[in-house]
Image 1 (cartoon, one colour):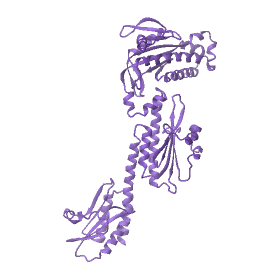
Image 2: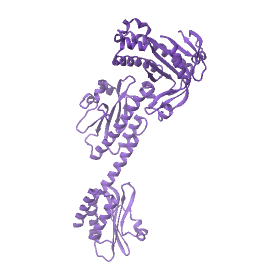
Image 3: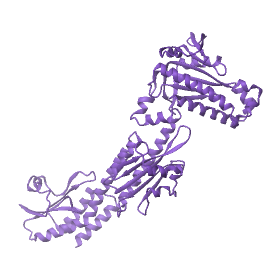
Image 4: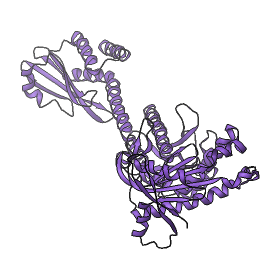
Amino acid sequence: MRVCEDVDAILEQCALEHKDLGGAIDIIFKCLADHLKPEAMFVQTQNEDLKRTVFSHKLSEEMLKGKIQDLIDVTKATFFSSPPHEWYIIPIDMAGEIIGTFGMAFSKDRDQKQELVFDLMTAVLEEMDNYFYSIQDSRRKHLAILEIQQCLKTEILTAAVDKAVAALEGFVPIQDLLLLYIDEGECGDSSIQYLLYRDCQKLYDSLYNQSPELEKALKSGPRILEKDNKDLELFFPHDSSTEIILFDGIVSENPVGKMVIRPYDGIGFSMTSRELIQVFSGALQQRLIDFKREKNSLLRTFSKKVTEKMVGIPGHSTKYLSFREAEIGILFADFSCFSKLCDQVLKTSGRIERFIEGWKSGLILKLFGHEGAFDKMLGASFIGVFGPPFYQFSRYETATKLLTASREMIFFTETFLKCEENSDIRKVESFFDFGVTIALNLCKSNIGFIGSDQNLSVIGSGMENLVLLQNISKKGEILATSSVIEAFEIGKTSNLELKGPMTILSKYPQEEITYYKIVK
């Protein structure tokens, strides 16, 4: 029929011009008006926002107030007379689902057979079916994309992935989905974490519900993320329908993760499914990069144990990292006679850097071992604090951690100077001048993450007073302010051997600072 050919041509042109549903139906109405000369027409269906909408041609308010309003949702071909018109209404059926209705009104004076009119309307709808479907399918896909992206904004990574995978259910026929991702350690080491889903429900995860088989497969380490690596296939068989997606950094090509998706047996992924998988993987890649960046940032300051606990708490940045006044323990360690060591032994910038990095790494491990936080290095001076991020220690616990970490740092420094790499240091006459001096304080300070790089900062006289103590301390000595010693007394610790009290005058405000030397 010519009218159907014209409708088909109109829909092709509308698709090329990306016309919306309302614009396309208006053009079709004009075509039908030219060919069939109806008195009025309407199409009721969902628009691009999936909202029920009536598109009409010459449909007056008077007509809508009549019986047509009751019959706008018919489920089968319906004819009725409403003088001076005769109405023909048929449902718009798509794969057994009624998605709307199509109605036409003709004058009662026209002599026409009902069956022919219904057949003609059905033929017209068959031309429009694909267009209606593409509109609604595109909208559903768009809503699914928005939901996936919103889910992946959830602060806790594993919860974000759980929600996003659940959002894919009903759109993508996923039987199994495995996500592997890099989890950085506190000393530059890394491990592979995983989440395994079946039927969009989490089955295993590396943190709380491990899979023995998958744990074996992951023994190959980070190379399992490589494109051609086959270690996973024994546990997670691949075939031609399996999607494998690698996640790299946005700038670098260093892998941050890998995703393997397998559909149900006998079912492949349609283009719509592949598009949604692509959107999901793109958003997930950015989320993994953000996760890695945040973890790396926190691991510069906190131990892996503390970091993992913190990132698992919603709102952790505001709750734990914001700037505040708090009572904290401060440890200031300085390498004694470092300038002399550089002049006599280290000499080159590369050797100096290796020495400082090696010494700092050892001190950080001792600090993290007692739940301390790393503040910064100032030349050959190391600053650690006890309190953040959870601020849960008593004064006695803080003092105990300060002293225990200090003793371990002194022992580590002695061992570090005797290691094979530093054998040349032992040969110089001034070898016994080298070591570490430590000063401790327990005080109220302003502390938190500030600045463009969001690094931990401690501001207050408590830090300045420690610098004064450190300047008068000698190799192997631990000097502590009176507040630290008082905290031990609260804990009824009687095995400290002290020298003091002694005093030193602070610069601003000028006042005496009472301190002790902890002999053992």
